[in-house]
Image (tube, rainbow over all chains, first blue to last red):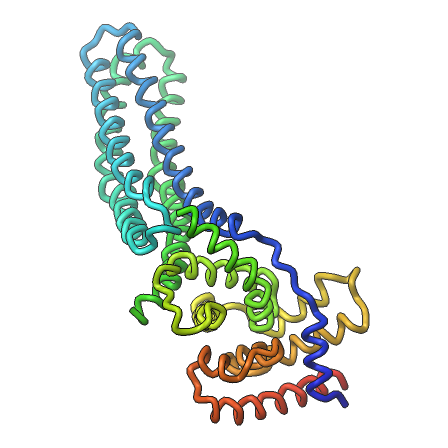
Length: 199
Length: 165
């Protein structure tokens, strides 16, 4: 039979170790946001790279039909617009520091989350429709140079790839992104709540 | 800014160990305790300019930590305390000893207490003065004394129960 004094001495003899410094702690908080920023930046870099490749193709590739030019131009414009929209969304979370301006950052993060949803839902279908028109125009001439089998393979591959992007990949990306940002929003709201209540 | 960082470092170095122990006692889990420590000190960092010297800074930090603990587990819907405290033994087989077993039993017993009681008793175990605990937990000192007496008896009973098993 033990008394409370024994329990207290046991508690005090169990030394705990804080494995993090104040600097590391603040850096860690910024790191969680940095992960989302990096992913968004990578997304934009990928789009810019696609845009550059398409422009090079537009400038230097040889084609005879106006449909190829029209197709490529549509794709280039669509990619440029979509990249711009993504960049505008990225700017929301690019500058604010969560450790310095928690409420401002929280509001921006919520706006970013909302925009992301619009970009990958309503706008995505417009993007896909325009991209499909561009691809159809582009293939109109280009497929003529290929054998029948290659034509079928290329068309099928393009259709399957676009369907995959619009369904599986888009949904998986949106789900992952939503879960990640929801967790951060929940955490930052929890952190802000105590002082909103008392001030 | 540099001054703020310097002050924060000082505050962190002085208080982090006690706050971590409080969080560890509350959750019985090192990872959760680390999360709670981080959230507590992030609040401290963000609101340092709002601190008025009406109370001790340690009291202010404890109050933040207590609030953080209470809201954290509710929103995170963490796993049952029993599972968490079992980790203390299971995760460190190399450190297994009679004393560690007793420590694990202690955390297991604390985990059986109500959320608020858990926080109060960890402050008692850390020998915080009663008037400070009263200020942190928002209970009058008279009521707190009665409550602490009850929690102490309950914890001792739970510990002895676990020890017998």
